Image 1 (tube, rainbow, N blue to C red):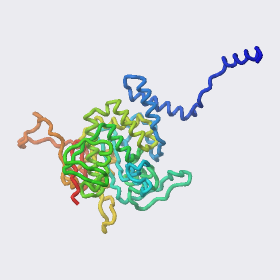
Image 2: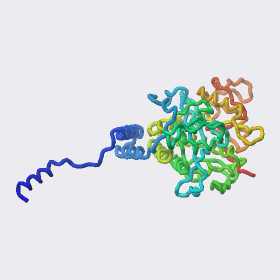
Image 3: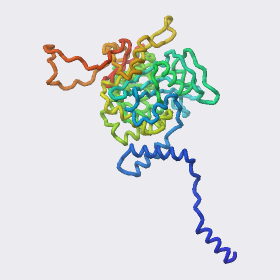
Image 4: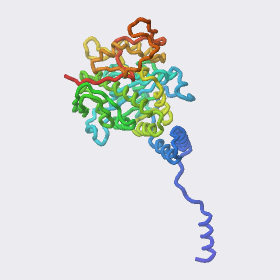
Length: 423
């Protein structure tokens, strides 16, 4: 090669622009940067490098979202407290079998069922929270829903009455949300689906949840085998406790709802007593478990909204967190489970952002477990004498009244010990 050729080559090498990987499209890059920045702001731990890693890790865990008809209600809302009539979030538990076969052969799966349906309502002033469980076998009407597989093909047809747990397989998460909205009249802007492994991961992220059993429970169907007494459970033990139906109560889905309510009440106590909701590291673990294991609606794709929802529970009085079973009854020939007339009282309270005040005698009559109240508080020297010589002031219940006595449940400060199924 000539000297002039070598000189030209050297000059080209010195002035060449380095080649980089292809940059993401502007829209996607902008979205990820906004998410990363918001997570960094929330997870303000000491080391900047740790914060940066956590932000990138959480953003990378976000799964594709599901569009909901009322998610626009969150547009421009600075925080949950600014949501008129409070915020309602639907949590759906799917029985979809993992592909690794850890919960049975996925090829033998009869279909995706939404066996758990819980509506979490946080009041606008954050003074009370309601968690309403809808029985999976309840017969409900289903409205027209967008086809999640082919949205351009037009809506899926409405149905006059089907078991609630068939709706997820019919039209996806958005259809379950639309069905509960139609049933209750409550607008739901956020929702999520959790599967088996997600439940296990969430229970581990909070460090386990304490549950109480009045008797030993052996249930080969769910894999729950625990002695009577109190246990701190997490992972697959927690999942088994939440899934067990044959092992507790009367062996029905209502017995399982009672166990789930006891678990959720204990979870609320755990989150408050351990300071989890004020611990950035634990909040990161919870956010990671949720984002990695749940299908979330679009408005929850931002991890800071997840953290904000969780942190609203930090200061709510446990006695103001009500776990309620949506009231149902059999039809005349006992072939279908339908909403009872008392269901409208629940609907009205939710729509009006009013507390669900459970009749204490309804709690005491629970056939699915024994109930104990919270630990006794120290005596108040200003309280009226116990012998009734002075009239006690009336209870401060605001404008609310107890629900009909067939609306059962517990509050967050109450311990329920599950009874074994003797059938």
